[in-house]
Image (cartoon, rainbow, N blue to C red):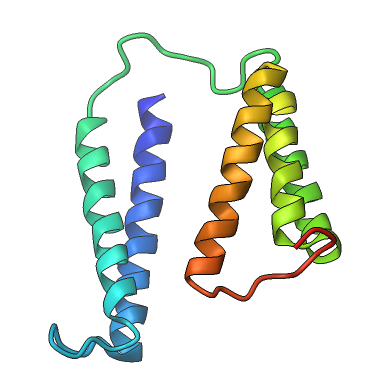
Length: 147
């Protein structure tokens, strides 16, 4: 398993370096007057540094080798991909808030197998949190049937 984790760390490191270079090219600015690439530069740099730490922590051989795709272990990731695919299809038709509420329900029931009580609490809290977040920041997102 450590081999795959090292491959993932190298991939993330390369993405981070590429992102930092791209952010620098669009304009870093200064600390007093940040440009459009200031925040993305630091995020990409942090990604690159953390992926290096992850790489170093996974050096050496596995204590107990594991099969990457054990029997049945592919079902949960497939459910997650399907739920996200449906979310992408619905967000334009139902709007951000409505489709996000349905995403919470689907994710918690289909992928996580949470109880209905947990689902109800997280859907109400999560949807309210998303609504407040988008309202306070005046973010323009697809409007839907509810809001």
